[in-house]
Length: 132
Image 1 (cartoon, rainbow, N blue to C red):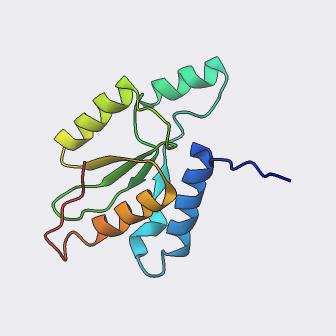
Image 2: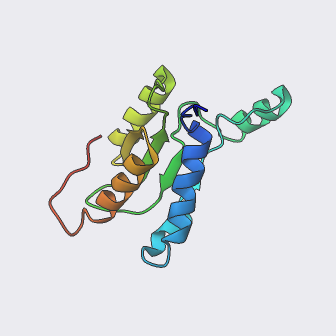
């Protein structure tokens, strides 16, 4: 019998990254405050309206690590599947986040996101710069 190889969804990838962060918060304390922005979550029209009034912003990346490192104010990660496409709103918002001194990146796999987080956490120790 032939098995079909399935690609993880963006949701599954993001859950895996957050799980990794929680498991590694003992080694890197700041990982206990990684948080998600529920912009893409399905919701009723009224709830969406209320969330926009409360400050929800289109294009905000999926994950945020609110820790300074290497001269950046915070790390923002937009998770995409390998075939995923970034939207115009995401490009605009990520560019604004960068203008304000943050690092905002798109990651196309769990491994890519974990490597990005580890590199970011070590920026103060090295002269490395993470791609943006």
